[in-house]
Amino acid sequence: MDKAWNKETESEKICERIKRCFTNRWRTKYWVSVVYYEPEHGYNLFFNIQPRNAYSRSIPIARLANCEYYGLLDIITEVRQTYRFTLNYLNFPDDQIREMRRKFR
View 1: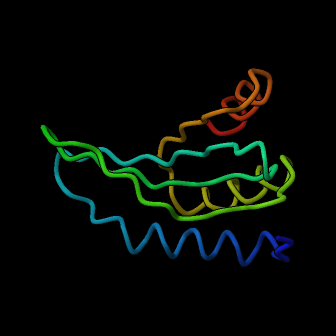
View 2: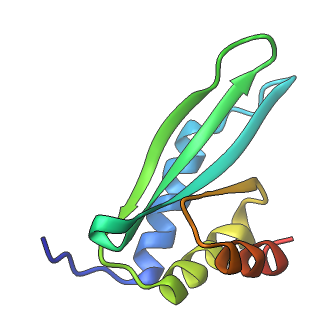
């Protein structure tokens, strides 16, 4: 499945989906998980919500199939200009995790 996309519209879609899910409730944790999916060489983004003393909820907000690593960094940079949520990285090589943690402090 070859899907044409560009980083500007994709980052706007991600921000719109986060805006729809974000309610800013008292004593609630919010974070974004970025997951590398190796068979498609793509990434999935999830918006996570965890009220105090309750289970967390994970909402899929984007699927970036056939996306390059540096394209992902550009998209995350644009999303971080709007929202400053904590980022959680899953299934990434150690050197890429270190690079992203340095870049998105």
